[in-house]
Length: 509
Image 1 (spheres, rainbow, N blue to C red):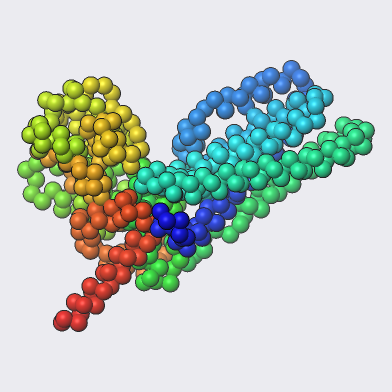
Image 2: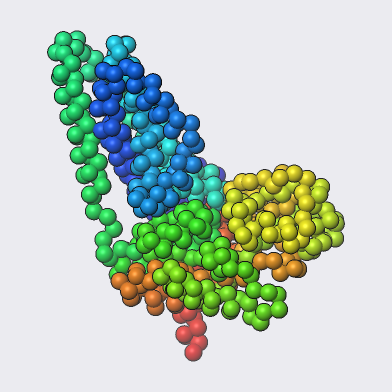
C-alpha cells in the first residue's frame, strides 16, 4: 500500500452502500429503542410502586441477556408471526436486549439513587443495541453487519472495518450525544424534582407514546416499490459474485431496480427467504437443493447423466412443493472439494479420499458450520469413507478453512471446487472416488410469483445459462479473495469482457 486514495478495494458503490447500511443500522437500533422505551417506562413506574415485583421483572430481563445474541436471532426467525427473516425478528431481538439496562436504570433511578443512573440505562442500551445490531445481517435485516459478514466470508479486513468503524462511530456519537443531553437536563433537575411524582408519570407516559409513534412511523416508511426486485445470496465469496451478477444483468437489461440482500447465511435461511417472497431470486446448487432442501438421496453411481437427472427432478419438485422456478445452469459446477496441502498429498502419494482415509486418525479436520450438519456433509462422508480423525473437527467460517489448512492448523477441509484460494494456497482436491457427493450445478432460483409480476426477468436470467465455465468462476473468486477487488468491480469487468467477446464474434461473422 502506498497510501494513495482511493485504495484498490474502494469504489464509489462501496461508499454509497456504507451510507445505505448505516441508515439501515440506525433504523434497526432506533426502532428497537423506541419499543424498549415504550415497554420499560410504564413497566418501570409500575414496579417502582410494587418493589416485591422488581426482582422478578429484572430477573426475567436478565435471563434474555444470558442467551447469545446470535441464538436469539436464529430462534426468532422461526416464529411465524414475525415473518421469517428480515427486520421484524431483528427488531424484536434488539428490543429484548435493550430492556434490562433500561429497566435497571429506571428502577434504581426511581429508588432515589444518584441521578446519573437514571440516564445511564438508556446510554448502555443504545451502545449495546448498536453493537448487537451488526448480527442482524445474518438474518437478512441489513445494517453494517453486512460488511462484517462479507469481510469474514472473503477474509477481507477492509470490508470488516467498513462495517465495524461506522458502527463504532454511531455508538460513540450516540453515547456522547446522550451525555450532553444529561448535562443539560441536570441543570434543570432541582426545580423539576419539586414538582412531584405525577409529572414524572405524565412525562413517562408521553415518552412512551412518542416512542410508539416513532416505531409506527419507521415501520410505515415506504418499502421497495413495484419496480424493484430483491436479489439475495449466501455469505461466501462466490455467492456474493453470483448475486451481484444477477443484479447487474437485471439492471442492464430491464428498467427494474435491484435491492441487494446479500449474505443471507446458509441454504435453509435463503431458501425460506425466496419461498416466502422476501427475496425474488438467488443462485443455488442442484446438489444442495436435492439433498438438503428436498431431502432426497444422491442418484446411484450407475445413473446415466446424474447432473441432468438431479436438475430435472429438482426443477419439477421445486415448482410443485415450493412455487419456485429453477433455471438452467450458469455453466459450472461447484462441488464440495475435500482438500489437503499439496505437499502433504505428494509426500504420502494420495490423490483420492479413499487413499487418504488410512492417514486421517493422525489428522485434524476443519469444516464450515453448514457442512457439519447437512445430509450431504460430514456425517455421511465419514460413513462412506470410514474416516477417523485425531479429535472432533474444528468448526469455523467457511472462508477461514482454506488459510487454516494452508497454515497447518488443520490437515483436511471441505471447500468449494471453484474457490480461487485452492491454487493460490497450493492445496489439492482429493477425488471423490466413491461418488459420495451429488452434482452441484449453479442454477438461478426465482419465486414463481415474482416472475409473473415481472415477466421481463425470465429472458434476462435465461440468457446467462452456460456462460460461466468453472475456470472462469474460479478466476472471479480469486480476484475478490486474493486481489482484494470489490465484488461489483469484478462483475462489471466480466460483463465488459463478455460484451467485447460477443462483439468480436459478431464482427468475425
